[in-house]
Structures are given as C-alpha cells and as structure tokens.
Length: 237
Ligand code: VGL
Ligand code: ZN
Image 1: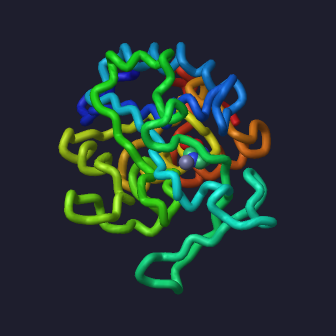
Image 2: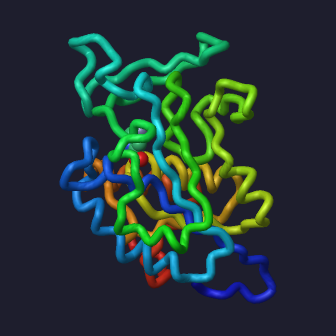
Image 3: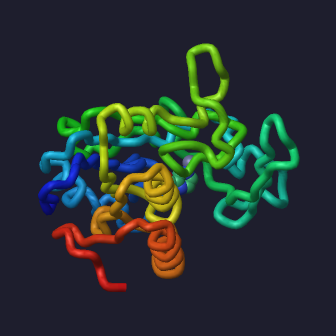
C-alpha cells in the first residue's frame, strides 16, 4: 500500500462472497479456481486497512435469481433470464440471469470458506435477502430500494454504505467472488459512491473466465475503478 503524503488515505478491504457455493469442489455455483484466491485475500487481511469487511450472498429460498423458482422451459441456470420489476413502479424493470440455488440463508453453501482468515475480518455484511430483486453489489440493489430497518421488509441496501461513511473511508480495495458479477458490481458502486476504488487482480476469479473477465474489467475501468496487481502497480491491459 503506497502512502499518500498530505492526502487523506483511509482504505477499506472488501472481501466479496468468499463462500462455499462459489467454490469448487462442491459449490452449486462454483467459480473455477475460486478457492485459490485465499492466499492473496489472507495476505491483504494482514495489512493495516482501516476496515476489513467480508460480504455474504444471503438469499431466501424463494429468491428471484434461482432458476428453480421459475417455470420451464425458460428456467435454465446460466442461460435463461427473468425480468425483475420494481415493487412499486412496474415501469421500472431489468433483465437478470438465472442461477442454480446458491447461498441459501443458514445452509452450508452460504458459509464463508474455512480458508478465509476470518480472525482479521472486522465485520460481515449480508446481501441479497430481498427475494424480489437481484443484488450483486454489496452496496445496494439496482433499484436502490429503501434500506433495511427492523420495521421494513426491504433488505436491498446493506449496511455497507453507512459503515464506510462512518469510518471516513477514502479508498476501497475489492477482492472475492465472482469477478464478473458481485466483485464487478460492488467495485462499480464503490466508485459511484465516491471512493477511489481498486480491484486486486490475483484476489478474484470469474464465472466466465476470458470473455466475462475482460468485459467486467472494461466496465470497471470505465466506471473509474483501477485494476491493480497485489504489489500495487496498475496492471497493463
Ligand atoms: C454472485 C451470481 C449470483 C456473485 C452472486 O457473488 O458474484 N454471482 N449471486
Ligand atoms: Zn446470488
């Protein structure tokens, strides 16, 4: 981590969805070589980040992104899409990909992997609890539905934005799974929320290596995210 003389530098580390269901050999949505990010993630966790956060994809069984919750024939995981409609405004909607059931709350697949050095994680943020919407970003759902309160039923904004704000975080370093979905969306949101944002390449893996990875990097870079190597240099691309 380079020091920025005369400049505010209060970095956070965001470890996205390093959970059993996203890892071989048994994950229902296993990302190729997903578990291999552990040494990089754990090395980063030893550095003096002001805040170290791990996120968990944390879905109810009736989550809209599960292919099993949609009728055939348009319910093929990794292939079919469904339309997500805004709960209060049907004119707002988006298409989203369907997945195998994954990270169901309280199941072994939703557990953080044991390789993750949780002893250096300050807090765990859960996301994706609202069955009605997809939530790849650890910040908010795509509609920016109202935040969770004990009284409300919406859980589409996680506690993350407030946590970073309250800590006075200036920079967000992102690693975890998957590079082309939740890492991409979380990094882009971090940049949109005004943080200098970095994705550490060795600390992530894609659902679709190659095309998925390249497209995700392009989108992140277009949003102002820097892609860096673990030694901190910006990676040539
Ligand atoms: C993710 C697909 C579905 C991720 C979560 O963590 O990247 N991907 N849900
Ligand atoms: Zn999910």
